[in-house]
Length: 517
Image: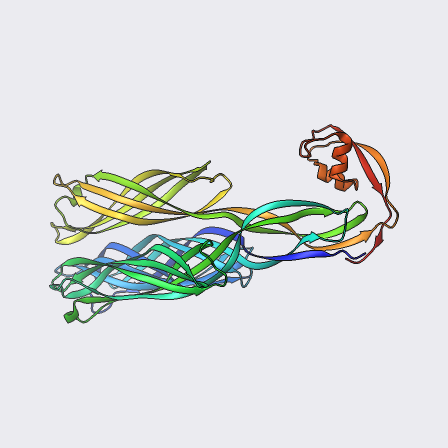
């Protein structure tokens, strides 16, 4: 006989593998001839740009650079402060057994530490430690058997799922550029430090397009030609469109940003301005909540079925939760009393996260670095402090099976020097938590059938329930049906049988012959 199967297809974003690794990026930099020798490094910072990322068989490759800013004490009679901007290029290959060419790669790189070692007055060695979070995904269209239409006694075990099916994805590049005006009395001598953050990420759906929006917040510290230090800040909008068919307002839009390149250079002195250009890649993934009733197992009492069962790993219950952690702290820092604060770097770090039912508990710390004037040396110094914090986040439905991808943005940042020379810190951390559950589901994508020619002949056997048994497994094993076993044994709830329980099982007896499916 011919078995008629009804098939369907499903587009999913499978999570193939995840890995967190710490890598080292190292390189040397030469002090240009137009700058004085370096005597002491005061502060070293940087921004990571990713030129290219690629998934290969068994590994991933990342090409990029770290734009490094060094503030240093010059080795000259004046002993003044100078700045050096340089670039360390890198290519890193990270082993990932699950990786195959053509898969998609999400890569988040975070600069944890950068060290400047003076080799001689004209040369320094830069060593950076970078945390890399990798996620490999495969966008696949999966074909599966949804039902069997022409076999009356086919026993089918269905299970309901609600998964996040992929509607579509795409990337686009946006250029954020502006001319930042500095104080009119400042004649800019050199750039000393640049920091960029991509914040306020949003998306909007319109006519089969997704608009991704964000802000690039840039802060620049610079030196004037009369040896004064000043700072300027700007916020440049970032915007990009991606075409995605059948996208709707009900869909879940996941937007990832990645800094590809950063250019910061002074304009002519007369213009009193700095040119800023950032190339940012916007990656958009759109998901829909899709309810499915999938066949998990099937058999026929009078036929032997051979099925090809696949297993896929996908997501469900995906959502983005936002919360704010308010940190209010008062610090007495003796070194900074009566001094001018030029810049404050704040780096939040999540040290631990505990997932309870409907709640997430974060334990972390703020690593705060002050750059301030030193009136005794007429130079600048740095001071680092660490402030621990705890935050309870209410999140309905979250539990131990939930997976989290946490991003922290610095919201409000008020650093106030009080009359008693203490420093009052008012810092708001915007917590953006991408929550989802990873679910592994069975799909039946092929079937072959062998038929029993003889008519059905019933017999009764006695079976004692063993650990791990279900009525479905017992019925399939003895070519019976769950309904018949439950009826004969007076079982009201098919899901409730106990180990050692005696069951009478009506059994089919049949010979087999091959037919095509």
